[in-house]
Length: 236
Image (cartoon, rainbow, N blue to C red; front, side, top):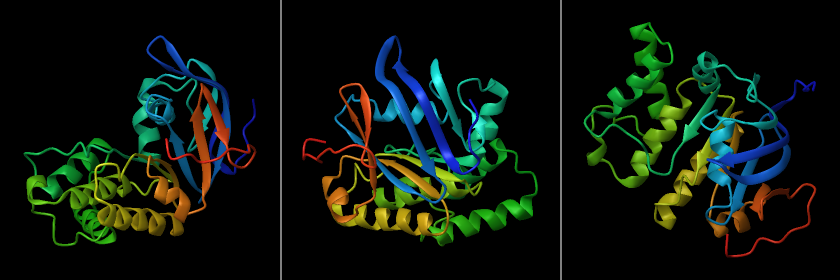
């Protein structure tokens, strides 16, 4: 199948598996460059599995997909680190090294993704921390930061390689509403500066306030608000 050059994500006729179980069938969608998209659905409906498939943590066994120029359905193991340099991944549970400072957490990722020049690394580290509002946090340990600040570190980490798209799995799920609003505004700012966003969320208030496109995992299918007529229930 030929893919066009415009979308940053293209998925065609994919089946998403978790172990031996099929969680989503016949999945097809595009995400355009610079687009902001919500991903919703009940717990266990396939949201996280879909995201993991897009960044090649779960193998795409049926169907075709391209993310940031990489074909996911036949990606080689040695290509996966290069794919992940083109995308940023934001987790709900932070996944920071608790025994390393903020700077050391970011430097670890930079070294793992091929950065060599120490001067450029130092400059980029300062840039991403400033971008997320944590210019003075480089020497702090994770336990010295609030939950919202830790999530900002995670977002800074995801921005290190100037990704084409951020994949965010419930990034505000563990935060109180006011802090969550600030994190969401940061995602909006990142999107306005040219990075596409695919954000899984249970936050129904976000969906009410911000009428972005919605992908909904429901009963083994992926529904798209661009092409499907579905309502957003508070059970998501």
